[in-house]
Image (cartoon, rainbow, N blue to C red):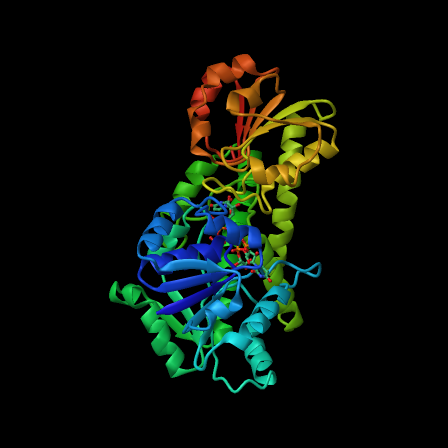
Length: 433
Ligand code: UDX
Ligand code: UDX
């Protein structure tokens, strides 16, 4: 099928490339011309494991191209929209870009085109877009579809090809037929497809993300209890996770959840629910809990530095919001560094993929940008594991101890081997232990 994608960020580009790799003819557009130029020069604008291979496969099939001209989308039978839906000051989801994209598209759409909203939007947005199109007095019959994504950055290719389910909100049998064509290979592989109305599909996305964020905030608070009773969070998670009703996924304690989705989506959902007269007290508590998590992390570092961070050298390993991505949006590591700088600490840091993006946010001259982990440890008063990069597990604790000013390691991801670090003479502290 001829498919267009408007907004080729982490979600839109991954979706466009993978749809092309499975045989659809895909054309993508984005208002960020730098991104378009990068792709026209065969460069991917961000890192996502496995995306290069899918991109090469799509190019080999001549199924994928990018354009700067909306008129190039006129042949599309289905248009995915995955433009940014950032958070307004009020917490509400900013739909300006979505509306701008639809208005830019409208003159070029042909009759019976599917307009498929993949961006995370408040329930009712598809209906709002439908009304907007009708009020433009177009003669066209445009089919609105909600098709939220569940792609985890760093796992997006796997998640695209192995979804637990495909969620589709629609209003017409024609749209259902066409969506069946788009996802034919998934349907053949018996992937469950949830077909409902658009507002329910939109809410499934928010409710899923909010539930996952709740699990994370929950285990982070339980980790606090473990620390007070000398309990062990890892055994607790194992003991909880064996209950199939609980499951052990999304129960990893850490410095709080970040990324471009959870923080934004739970605020948007909470704000939306409030405007609907059904406030979500639990989600409001999760928002507060995650916000205070960063303060808790700073307090841990401050305590290990004798109560003051002034002039201390703190090594931060990891800048991205999670491993296997270059994305630093809403990264707890960035928040921790910002607070350390406010408290007049000196920071040394390294991340395998996040340095470039982090430097666009952190500009202080109190930061030393290092090339690898040992350089971060050298002369540090405390070394913090902020992101669970596999390569940090290869660091030699004995060498770490020799290099540090004071041998304190705070593992905010419970990534390292606790015994090994302790027998190497390091004062090692994990989360929840
Ligand atoms: C985005 C939404 O933010 C998220 O809510 C949704 O779940 C999926 O799409 P992501 O892909 O991570 O997530 O966002 P981002 O990486 O910021 O990409 C958005 C893209 O849209 C960017 O390339 C941006 O340039 C583009 N865009 C934004 C447009 O093409 N037009 C606009 O008006 C605004
Ligand atoms: C999330 C959802 O998982 C995905 O379905 C949705 O489409 C987009 O948002 P993403 O934000 O890319 O994906 O990453 P995810 O793996 O969910 O992690 C989000 C944050 O939670 C990260 O900061 C991560 O470090 C943190 N996290 C995740 C934990 O602290 N503990 C966990 O057990 C899992």
